[in-house]
Length: 149
Image (cartoon, rainbow, N blue to C red; front, side, top):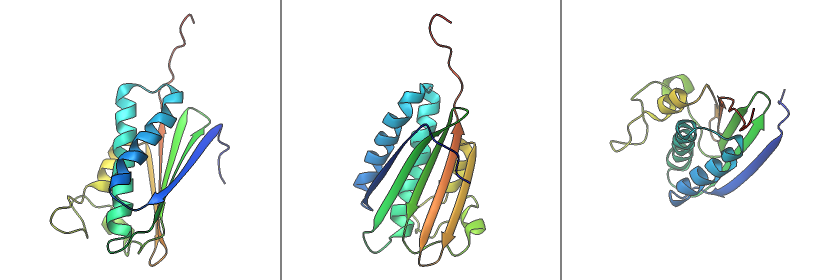
């Protein structure tokens, strides 16, 4: 069951590496309304970069497809981020989530999911071969004291 969001935004763009920076900046701008700390904002940007890069590199290794990014503000000051592709899918999600595992060749570190997990409070990965992958991440932001209270 989906949690009701107080605000949300959805972006869709071609799986070109040049769009990773756009997704990172757009999500950071959206999250700014939650008044995150600089550290929280950097964590969010890093996790989005990893998820979008995975979708581009692994979801569509030999073609250009669509990447969908959704950001939602949920009750309890929780930011929920979803990155979805309709690419080739992950044969073994548990194996793919292990540190240092990669299907992307020597230039890939295999640390994408590990980095996402370390910067976010919750990470869920759903994938089906030939149908794509959906990564959902959640981060509870620290409540900030309002001036004068």
